[in-house]
Length: 162
Length: 309
Ligand SMILES: Nc1nc2c(ncn2[C@@H]2O[C@H](COP(=O)(O)OP(=O)(O)OP(=O)(O)O)[C@@H](O)[C@H]2O)c(=O)[nH]1
Ligand SMILES: [Mg+2]
Ligand SMILES: [Zn+2]
Ligand SMILES: [Zn+2]
Ligand SMILES: [Zn+2]
Image 1 (tube, rainbow over the protein chains, first blue to last red):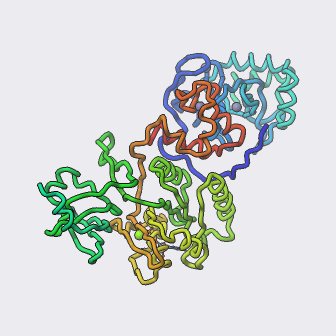
Image 2 (cartoon, chains in turn cyan, blue):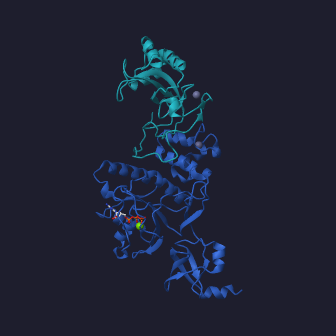
Image 3 (cartoon, rainbow over the protein chains, first blue to last red):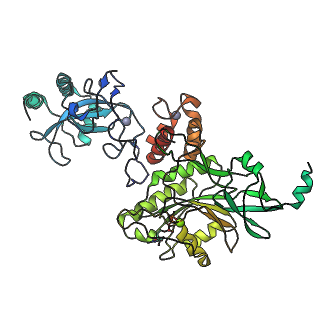
């Protein structure tokens, strides 16, 4: 990946570019996505609850909308948010790991209340046979994907309380 | 009509200030306050600006506007959402536009700088960026950021001066950059536009006022655009602080051209001139951003201006 020679600026996004974009149609599956916090349970919905795809819009921080890539980000694995910014096994919030189709950027995202749980399970199943490139990218980023033996934990997190 | 005869009786001058329908005109025989002739008022809609060259008739009225070599205008602030906006002329016949920002008090907003620069590019007037109150940032992390971002703008071809009227830094460079030119100072209230001029020409003694101690906002001290001659040659137009600077008459399709660093990429987009450089696949501008050739902040300014000029 290229390094960016530009200084990171202290800045706040101006009005009209807030975190919620209102309801929108998913570019990938074509279904309507409602942005309301009551439905998603999260402040910034960053992926489609139906197909779980998202877009590469952020560069330095969640919500900065500074990325020019705008590629499709596909869910590739599940992980646990341990604390701060460490992602380790066993404890912590269940998170979706996305990877950008265009540039390979990884991002870790909270699961929303109305995300399709069956679909999340399918991501989990598929993540047991990751291609070597994705595997290497995850390792490089220090992200530990959940493994087959943790299936029960995944189900518990998705259906049975926290 | 004996046009030639009247012209010989006419006096030429430059508008140095606009005040309630009349104009202060600087002529070879001194400054005077002149209304417009009824005919000119009808024809021009009263739209004359500081820096305009005019002729004054024997009755002391402005009777003609000479052709402008360039001008800067902005979109008037809409009195209410959805209301009509119109062109608001700021000044005419300029050698450079000088966007002024404070390092702090009020807080530096880089994205506003891009608005001014696009406006200057579209008017084909060179820009000189001035950051004031650098003393307030010195020794703090903000100073590094300002130095780095200043270097990025310099790399685009825009000179950037870091100044302080408190410790005098950057003022000699500022003086040199204004020498022999007619410069337009623009920026938010309280950034220190007038203070810069007072520091340059102590004789001016123009009114300045401290910014709000809590919000850092200015108090709209300067109330009319005024052209001030510099003793060393050249002139500066001081302007009242501007809250919003909406682009006027900049076509969305041309916008990317006014970001000089985007120009080399514009003919390489897959959709050619139809590319808005927003979502289009095969967009060479977006690629240049992801490749680190164009600042993501400048690109975001482009998108913002495209949808909210
Ligand atoms: N610390 C510091 N304060 C400055 C500097 N330059 C100006 N100020 C202060 O900033 C305040 C506002 O300055 P003005 O020159 O009135 O600002 P302006 O841009 O002309 O404001 P408007 O006329 O309202 O548009 C004054 O209190 C100045 O003393 C500087 O270099 N350093
Ligand atoms: Mg002032
Ligand atoms: Zn979808
Ligand atoms: Zn990407
Ligand atoms: Zn393009």
